Image 1 (cartoon, rainbow, N blue to C red):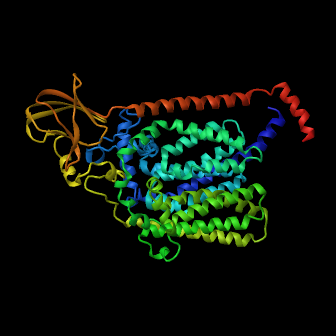
Image 2 (cartoon, rainbow, N blue to C red):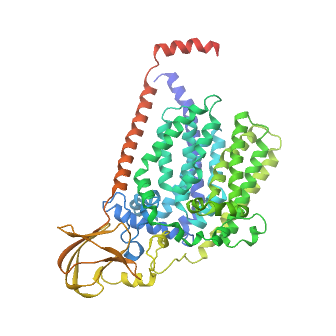
Image 3 (tube, helix red, strand yellow):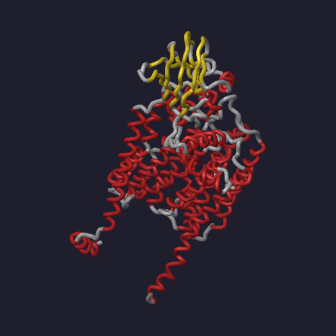
Length: 581
């Protein structure tokens, strides 16, 4: 090896190690913030923790039995089943299922491992996006701040245990990173944007609705003057391709939404909407619940931090930075208004929006995202100029102190009993929406302790031949048959028929148990109960497959173009144009 080669490698090694230190710092920060989970386990008093644990366990059980995408969870709700995965985003459950054997091998809880991975991913993706507008050191600090934001860590990660929304906060910076690259016509950016947007959709569809305009607005803002319309083409194309990749989940979810009427959820009443709006007045101390008071404090804290960053950096920024600052401030102002009590009339006037977003304080997602570039601008100026540096650092430290106080306070929730939702409901979030009218949880629980299939009245016998997700086979024999009740919850997609002749049987809910009830004719028969894969699932699967092929083709084409030497005419044009520039 030549001396020049050795020297070059020696010069490159420190730079490589220095760059690698930033992701490692983010990993350690995420680990420190997750220590309560590693030491004390999942926070079971959080709103959604038990739901995600139950979803993950039953999803993993069926996944490792060979069902690639479980939608009907056979053993959920004390063995009576659940259709929630027909509409609920599956990504957190996939993470749980894939981590389960690894976590078992190293004697770790799969939920804890997934939560840590989620927080870590949010920091790494934030680092990647902020790196497009700041150096590595600033980007690393901003990524650590992002993981520490009160709504992200205290509210979503701990108090709510809202893993899908936490994953959305992880993928949104990645979507905006590839949006920036696509707007600047970087190779491979469209495929990256499509993949990131698909991950966002299968993680938390509500966050997609909340943040759907951000890629478009960002593309317009970062694109050069005169090229903004052109910059939108790859961005819109990438978003559309991402929606196609996620179609295996998205299409059946949209079709099945009619079986999950949000009007049956008890938190969408007038009183409930009012109680979930925030207040920066006396409501900070006298809000309707501990959670709303915590959310109000977190939102006020974030709003003040964003205003401080914008105020300090406004005069020092370029025109492009000022344009971005104005965009993020406008987004924050609109979000704040719709989270506060004066916006109640607007929520009442927009019932579809209310049903889709459900909780106004979810708009804090936008504040978390907006704070990333603004804090990057602040830290960049802080490193470049010494004037007022001590004062700015002291104020930022004060904000960090309030975030730390909220983080420490939420750990007291370990002393609170686990969240409880009912006798048979295993904290299935959509349980009250899809279960039949007139269902009684105590009756359902009692029925779950009996035979899997039995005649409610009359004389007859039932033998269960197979008991699988979405498919149950039975042999019946009776002279005078009453209704046959099966220990799975009624859901409109269940169908029943006699085999082999294919005669269709009537299916309905047995009340008050809420279980499947089938009218079986007298005699000896084999009965097939199933939720067949209908057109929506087939169309969604086909769209996803075609979109993945398209994404791979786009990526391969981009890489092939990158490896091709420039054409002679391109080189000549570059040589002619360079002096003029």
